[in-house]
Every structure is written in C-alpha cells, then in structure tokens.
Image (tube, rainbow, N blue to C red; front, side):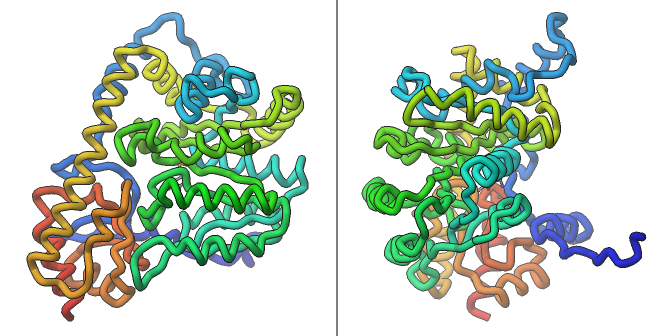
Length: 401
Ligand code: PMP
C-alpha cells in the first residue's frame, strides 16, 4: 500500500545543515539555518533561561498534569502583554487575549485553520520572498487562493513599497495579509514607520485581514517595544487582527515550541466565541500544548529581575549581530568587492539578503565550504570574529569570479 508514495523534495535549510555536518573541512561555516550562535560559533542557552529551568526542575509544586487546551494562562497573558504593551487599551478593555501554540509555526497553523473554518477566508497574500513555510501552512490547511505581493527590489536591494502596495491593491476584500512584524525573513528589510502607515491605509481601505508574524520581537533591535511598533500601530488604529508569536529566537527556546496566538478584536463581546473555537481547533490537532518552554517564558516575563536579565541577553544578541553586519560591510568595501554593501547594515535581525546570485552561492558552498541559501540569504549569527575575514574574502572571490 505504500509502494506509490512519491519521495517529497528536501527542505533546503535542513539539507544544507546536513551537508555542513558531513563536510570534513576545518574552514566550513554554516550561514543557513536561523539559529543564534555565539562569537565562538556555539548555540547559546540564555543564562536567565538556564537559571529558570533549574529552578523549575527543583520546584516540588510543579507536576506534569495536562495544561488547559489553550495553554498556560500566565504565559499567554505575559505573551499578549509583551506584544501589545502592558498599557495597551486592547488589553485593558478585554479586547485581546492569547492562546498558547506550538511555537510560531503552530500559531500560524491555528490562525489559518480558524480563518478558513470560521470566517470562510480562503485567500492569503504573503511577501515575495517570505519564510517559505507561509505558503505551505496556508496551502495545507485548505486556503485555495495563495498569492505573493512584491516586497524586495533586488536591483536596489531595498523594500519595493510601490510594488507591495500595487499588488495588495488587487487583493479582494477579506484576503489575509501576512505581515512580518519586524526583521523580515529572509530580507532583513522592514518598512519605515511612514511606510507602515501607507500599508495600514491600504489594508483598511481594502478591508484586508492583517496577520502579523512576530518571530523576532526583541531579538531584532534589542527592544521588544521597538520591534512591536507596527503591530501596536495597527492595534491603535482599531484593526481586528492576529499576531503569531514565537519565543524560539528571543528566548533561544527553539526546540521547546513556545508560541502564542494573540487575538485582537473590536469588542470583548466576541471573546468567548473565538476562544471556544480556537479551543476546538487545538483539541483536534494535539489536544494541549507542551509546558516546558511556556513555564520558562512565563516565569521570566513575570519576574522583574529575571525579565531584566532577559532584556540584557537580547541586547547582547542583537548588538553582536549589528557588529557582524558592520564588519562584513566594512570588509567587503575594503576589499573593493564590486557592488554596494550598505544594505547589509540597513537590514535588521538574523538574516541578510546579500544579493549574491545562485552561481555565486554555488561557488561559496563548493569551493569555500560556506553554506547559505540559494537565494543568497545568510544567517548573520553564523558569522563571528574567527570566520568573518574568511567569509568576506570568499564572497569577494565569488563576486569577482
Ligand atoms: N515566522 C518566521 C518569519 C520565521 O522566520 C520563523 C522561524 N524561522 C517562524 C515564523 C516560526 O518559527 P518557530 O515555529 O520555530 O517558532
């Protein structure tokens, strides 16, 4: 019965990581997968996370009973507050609530299921390029009209706002628009506040449904408030919207799958209906979420001293990335590498869309053992003071041919 199952295509980012592991070269560099690395190229458990997990492990009051279907209440409230702001009118007026999800991916999936089942929305727009899972999640759950909107101007290596607005102008009423809250993956290029206002005007006029994907809050700029600016701006303007939050990057809790779907409504009167339907969707998929990561995030965000330590850690991660951006740009300029490289410092967050083309990428992988996506996207965290000279010289060689 299994004989006719075709083999599916490899997932590029995981295939590259495997190729990196199998590569015996001592010079190899992995710039593919989106995970933070220290300046010696190691994964980093945030000190406050380590401390908190030890204290949770020793806490006799904690057991392994099921969580409620919609998750740990102290976590969903803290997550919702983190994204909307503690003084958010939507929270005060009980127009906003959260449901715990299987990290950011799970939040997107639960959101998509709800939008299709309950609101009968079947059209989604995502940026071109975007995190490739956006298409898959919405396709798998049954959206039938999947469109991309222009986002990146490859020639100028900047945001193509006009293209974006022109494409969204074509979207029918009720289309879901996925917006990256900050640190756009893969380009690292975010709209300015002024550009967000233009986007909001269009979303409002065309009656589109904004769905914010927030996978990098705090990790991008070091300030959770700054990274949530666009979301809060939309909420202040009175939009009803979803936010899909991940705690993978900003807490370094990748495998623990801590996420939250924040729902913002015009009135609290719809809360119980929406909450009950989300409960049923989770129930049918995995019944209830894992507790481990949510307990850590909850304890850190709800304890002022721990929260401060977390803020220090996101500062140090984001400033290390900014420093790597600066060094890479400076080194490419010093080497006289043809092209402009300022976009590397103008971009924000984990990724840089370098502008390298597919054949240059192939040279970097084959001749220099530097692994990066076909599109030229690099994970800035894979760079460190020990390998940045090597990477800059390799990019220069690949570009000059
Ligand atoms: N959205 C975007 C744009 C992302 O980059 C990521 C992480 N790569 C996610 C969502 C979700 O990741 P996770 O499920 O690990 O939280």
